[in-house]
Image (cartoon, rainbow, N blue to C red; front, side, top):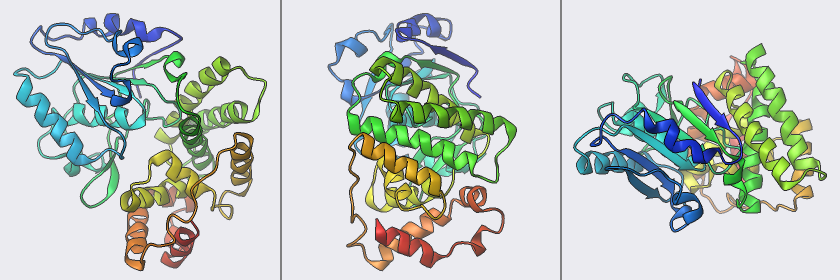
Length: 353
């Protein structure tokens, strides 16, 4: 679990005080990995507490994070700074936070990021790392994984060393998120709770967080009496609870199939989950119906026909990537999951998208 968390409007201003006693020396910098959408945004970047050799690295998240991107960031940091950084601070959406977590791991572990895609492969603790989300819903701020697309697959670095040491949850930071992105990442949170609550890995701990995330998502997306501030506060906490729920259980069919879309088409995670979820009424009927109500309520249209022109080999690659995530399928369908869903089932589902 994340050991320290601060919540509240304006709490971003506490960052300097929070990291001050974590500085190893004036030659060991804090490296701030920041979504490049904030480049030139003095309201946010002007409040980053730079000192000594500290550095801001702006990263593009136009595409899903890649293992090669992590390796390049790590190489650049090592070449520029003689001393190992005092810490890595990620400021941005889920992709930026995943990059920050991965970089903090790879600064203390040999090899390439792709070597650690899987479960519990990391041997050495990561350096001190802080997560500050500027988009809510992904749960990246609390999860024990960092989702990366590698040369062979899309799969997270799942380990006990992945979670942030400190998280700052400031709802002011999400006030300008574009509507569609707000919806897609919010639905990522809703889907986290759905897959956790309907999964075979469910336990009392994950259930308590999943139920709260589910309840808050319904309030955010179906209660039109909430103010924007109230909705942002709730969604930030729903994201936290949804992430906690899957950390102690697992996601399911939606995420497995979304990984396939992302690997072949580069589809962003949030919208990919929405595209998949729209077609899974046979597996999550009540919740797909609620999802459609929320989508209509907020007048969000999903892309259609994105797989229509793919050849059989490309769809088979999607199927291979999806089925490689065995814990997700076991959570969704039980230990005998392979008898309950076939390659042809997935082929037909992908063709509908």
